[in-house]
Image (cartoon, rainbow, N blue to C red; front, side, top):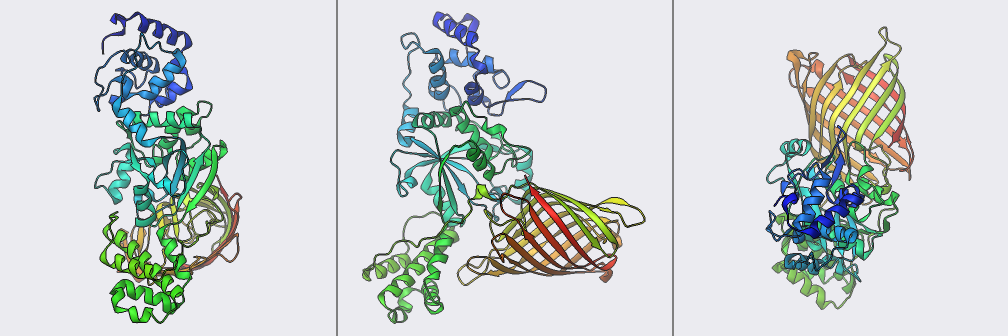
Length: 621
């Protein structure tokens, strides 16, 4: 760009003088349009990492220089990378806001025609904003804590037409990366995080049908003018990128940063601590009184389960046989039922056929298969009109569940004497935490630490009991329709004796099967686990063990949780290194208050069998 000092444009000089006088680069809207944040050394730096987002060479760290370069750019038709548009067309939100502050004279600064931007806005027609929250999905590393995206709603939207609106999704461009590689890249900021504008029906099929995730929609209290400004800023952000960080600059954080320019009186992205979870932004929106209403849309899994509730065992078995072997092979059996029951059976067979076709192919093909067409034809001949089953929303929405970080203080005793325990967990949820707002078949903990002070021993010390980097329990029930493999993985450091005077590294986990009631208030599982351990206390400093693990989780009352578990791991080389747990836990607490927990059991570690009991208080924040 031509140097500002030599630009022969008196009107530009006038605008620059007025911008200087009003110090526009310090205004909240400009700071948020550029995504500036204070640095540790007292400066300012934009969180945007794409260099093409800045018109000034020093714009990433100099708000004043970027504002001056932007005003100068508006007088040119130079092509700005990466899409080759002029500055006016590349940065319409900047232009709109600076015009509102400086009141551009169209005779001296002509408004340029921006056909691509106009096409974008005409297609979206933004009138309102909804934050969409697909619930957590344990089989996907990027969605273990749920996800958030924005939907730009058109005027006079209905429950049906909302699928035709567009969403704004922020995610890591991970390519083929998965598992450990995904985690490492996501923690170190190696991935590029980008915004994408996608039709909502595509995301809805992906989440609700392919991944069996319930959908929560939070409609915001934003005006059409604010919504349009957010859409303008979305246009600016799509071509660029951020360095993606799994726990900080993630899908949740940057969706709020997209909204913030339209809310200069709010500081939404400054509401977080050391990490940001998708559900956290829902709480921020609530605290700022920005949520107009909340709507729940069940996954296809829940719809199928609701259809199953209409049928007895014989009818359900017939629907499954029709799915497996075709309608023509079971038409005689179907005719034995009255027309209404036939409709229920065919509805279930079709719903499950549709679900299995999408989930099995990981595709969103809208075309009907021959089997699906045959089921619909048979269903239409019955002449019975019936809508989709009504699936009641959970009593507690995700943002009203307990907070993710937990601090615990407990007193207990084992065969060695009494102890005080202090424990802390970074995120997220375990089996004895209050269930409201969380999945009843999924537990996830990152950064779980427990230390004990043993006061009755000869050497009174604070000792490490546990330091789990991650623990995931995915116990989705197995039945005739949904054959899901349950699994567990846990890794970190654990105490190897009852007094925790020796510790070792462990990697433990394995697959299994879970069964449960339809409401999942009672869930049992069986796993075959293996453990790899490393510690100087082991023979040859290593341990390789395997064995069974069983458990039962229940909700005996609204605020109660019960867990019973048993496991035995037999060492492959030295039976003295076998370990066992027979444990019970009972907790009481609501989603907005601390919980009390009573736990105990009989254990075998390196120093033999012992008994233990503990009472603890858990505080969530």
